[in-house]
Amino acid sequence: MNEGAFQLARIIRRLKARVSTEELGGETVEQLVRRWSRLRSPELNIEVREYDPHWPAAFDAEKHRLQGALKDLGLVDIQHIGSTSIAPLPSKNIIDLAVAVQSLPCSAQQTEALLGLGYQAYGPSPIDPDFSWFWRIEAEGQGAFVVHVCGAQSPWFSHLIHFRDFMRAFPEERQQYEALKRELAQAPDQSWLEYSIVKRALALRITERANAWAEKAAPQLS
Image 1 (cartoon, rainbow, N blue to C red):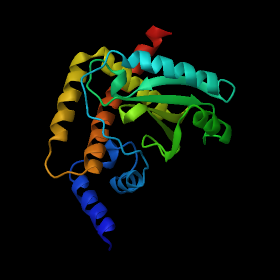
Image 2: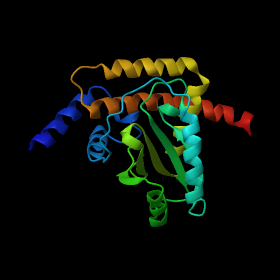
Image 3: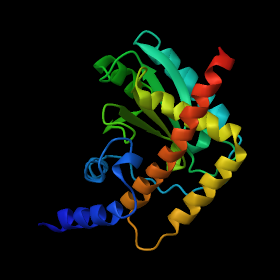
């Protein structure tokens, strides 16, 4: 077994003591570790900062650009997701956008349109292997926009929105999530993969409550 494979095996053993398949959205620890270990992403040195009230406006401006480029290419919806969409959570200056299209995989025309806006393709998204993600790095690497091209009918697309709206609606949930993330980040001798996968399990536990809340609230919103 080479050094890389040995390291992944060690991470898998450690993670199995911390999370279960039921907490990872249907993937086993082995599947998620191996999938995420193959992810491509740009190397950026962006520190976590306090919530920036300019993030919603940055999202709106980027959404407008994306709508113009994708309006005739199966675009269904564009949503602001991730920590920058949830005031007042701290976050890195990276705006995540879920771009829902009629069908997957991402087409050559959609990819070409995103490349024309200055994005670069980085293969499968960490959210779901069927999704594609694209990065556009701001000047001097001080921020980024990340597009996750999603299927409009994918459960993951609605899960992301429910999580965001639930966290916005319930400050106590948001505060607990932030505190648990900070505690998790301080765990000694853990790799980026371990931190990210345990954080995913934490987020999915909240998402279960968020989905139940959204289902209960749906008749009142219709």
